[in-house]
Image (tube, rainbow, N blue to C red; front, top):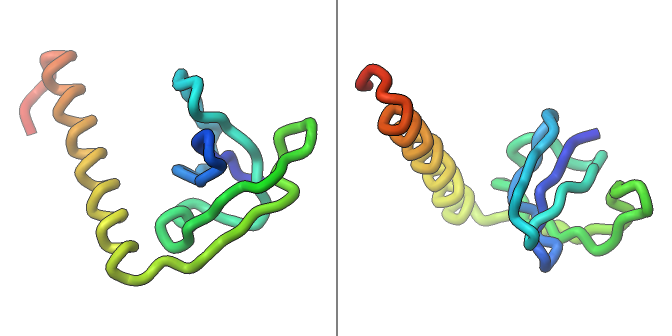
Length: 96
C-alpha cells in the first residue's frame, strides 16, 4: 500500500512507498493500493472517498496524454534541481 498526497479537491499530487509529510492544511495523506510511484504522472487521479483509516475506497483515474506526462516529468525534475540548489545555499555546501 502506498502513501498518497492529495489536495482539498482530492487530486493526487504524489504517490510514494515512503510516508509523506505535509505541513499544508490544504493537503492530506491517504493510503492507496491501486497505484504505484510515478502513476500520478501517467494518470490524473482523484480520490472520491476514504474509510476511517485513511485508505482510499473510491477514486477516478484518467490516463494523461504524452504531452501532459512530459510536462509533469520536467516539472518534477526542475523541483528536484531547485531543492538541491536550496540545500547548497542554505547549508553552504559544495557547488554542483
